[in-house]
Image (cartoon, rainbow, N blue to C red; front, side, top):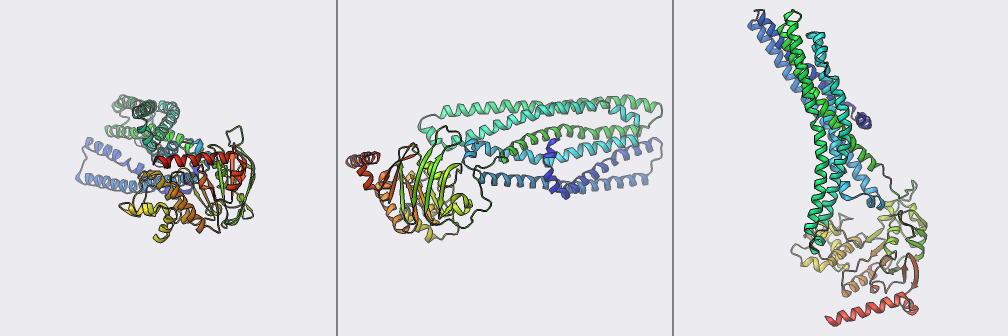
Length: 583
């Protein structure tokens, strides 16, 4: 029953609806007591030979009114209880989604996508069942069962009632034992479902790689293994769940046997009438549902309890981003001053960045280069406040970036990542994703700057072309340029290109960079790249290695140093000549 305590905040919030709904349930329970009593009265009247048509009509009218009353009150409780349960699911779904949007990269590294999806689907459905079916079965089992027992005591005989209820305590013991086991089993089943979700999402996302390497059968076998594991877990849940009904049937059967034996003896001794025994047996029949409901109640509550624990654990996770309650909410503007003494990922033993210092004035462009794993993308993550736990300062427009609200900071930054993510919508809507009211002229202007306008125009549906999930219908270079156009459309104060030109040819790259230099003459730009031609026109270029700056200067100054930059430049120039010769 602890799940009711955990959901106490919601029941207080929906107190009025649940009061009306539970009151209606109670009224239905009392109205259900009328038919068995009427049947008993009519049987005794027949037995006494006093039955008249007026008597029959009177009791028929009573039964009709009782039926109408049950219908009306059932409608009321369904509306209020099920309606409240739907609002709980809606509220939790909103909380969970809001929580997902506020969490940082550490959170998404710790939790798989499939697991998060399972929390937002199966777990929320199980919690909703507590607020709907759980309340119904709880009230119905105890109120209907209690009212029926009271009717048996008052309308028939207290001794017969006590004898008929002798098997009932065994039901509570059985439910307690099975309920505890069911809680653990259902939690394991939910975790298995989460694993299947994650596997499905991963396989669909990576289907091209799977097919390219001919690993379809291996992936199917792996998926089948996950399914088999989930089946084993769910079989245990179903086995424990299925034990409730046989135990309840056995207990009710014992009650019937005791009632018939003792009740028949009472009739022979004139303690009760035949009509009373018929009413009593009808009341025992009415106890069947409350007894079954108790079994179902423990099932619903244990499932909901396990799911609520999982969701609460997830909602309890805190972001590592330190939000300043007095943060600036005006958009960030001005130059950039970066001084990072040390940054280390939570699970790493060595620093990812150390002694990174540079200044970028408005209108300037800086290049960041280095071998794979040198720390380029890590630096971009710090600029975007994906991590706050570093030693040093990132000052934007004379204000520490940590002293801006995330909206004020991020709305001033246009970021094009290495992994270009496009949504399953039209090219137009992908480009104007951050500004849904942008005109077609604005969309086309951004597309021209990103050298993608002509490619889009050549598509059968132009800007109305659906790109498919994650942009599957576009080439790598096209996805990169659509991502660049999306960032340019918002005219950011700071534009960060994180190896965003790797999939375009040299001619297209030059066209994009020339356009950026012209339209962003008064704004700052950071270009991280493996291809050195992407940064050769930057005012300053930083060469990173193992998280440290090993060379810095303009293109000409770095060539004069005859270090890593010059060696990489000469290698790339040679590769370009070889490729040109082959063509």
